Length: 196
Image (cartoon, rainbow, N blue to C red; front, side, top):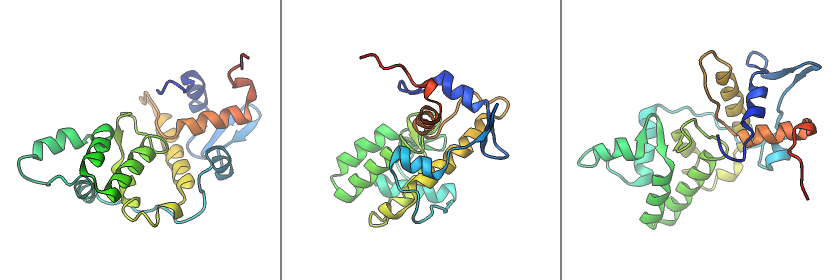
């Protein structure tokens, strides 16, 4: 996990998560992270255009090819598989470098937003790979501000919490900063002590 996260605290709350109801079962009742909480904590839009596309993986690969301007076939085919797209994700650092190298302003902004969103709101378990589906919503930069990013981040976190409660799951991903901040907000006893 990231250094700013309290792994033990997050693990304790994951153990209380009930995927059937999307709530934490506490001794005094049920609680859940709500859209209001997301807006209050992260200050990102929870209203707006929904992000509901679920493109086929091959479509996502082609989108990434278009973004980084690497040919689908040919001599870089092996490079594509290892450097750009591996285990269902795009290498974050390589994408940032490629965005800067291309010197095309729109693509540079798109790659930056892709890495920013993929490493904050939609974090995957590898920690260095990005979920390609995010890029679908960044292609038209005029629409980016109109999406309900907070709602999408919360839905993704709910899904990851549900997956983390399955037998055999060893880790969790998603916007864990949101989860930890929510815990601190509603359970101030768990906040780290402030030494002045």
